[in-house]
Length: 110
Figure 1: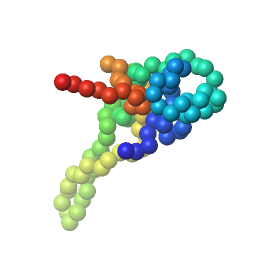
Figure 2 (figure 1 turned 180 degrees about the vertical axis):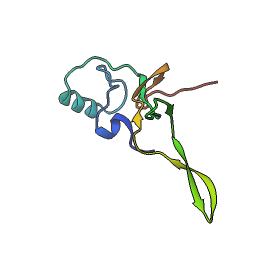
Figure 3 (figure 1 turned 30 degrees about the vertical axis):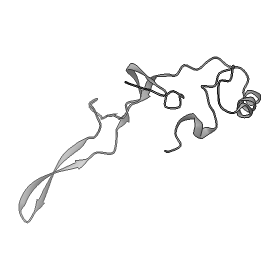
Figure 4 (figure 1 turned 135 degrees about the vertical axis):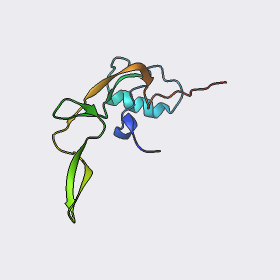
């Protein structure tokens, strides 16, 4: 799989102070690098939005404008995708918390 999340940066926020399985040398090395911090919850409450606002305040994934092209005396309408003057949606609060992608847990359903 791809390198995503905190493992790609060399940080592992879900380690516990008690150890618990895994290599003890890696845990000791991380303990030397980072001082004790508060426990990180395994849940994600927000995400980056994938939609954009246009100049009129409309929200959508993509925006198109209709252009009229005259070819051989015939008028033809064509849709052109708009790339300029779009504002990203920003941070979106999730309806239900999700489990963080780097949290070491196995989900099992019978």
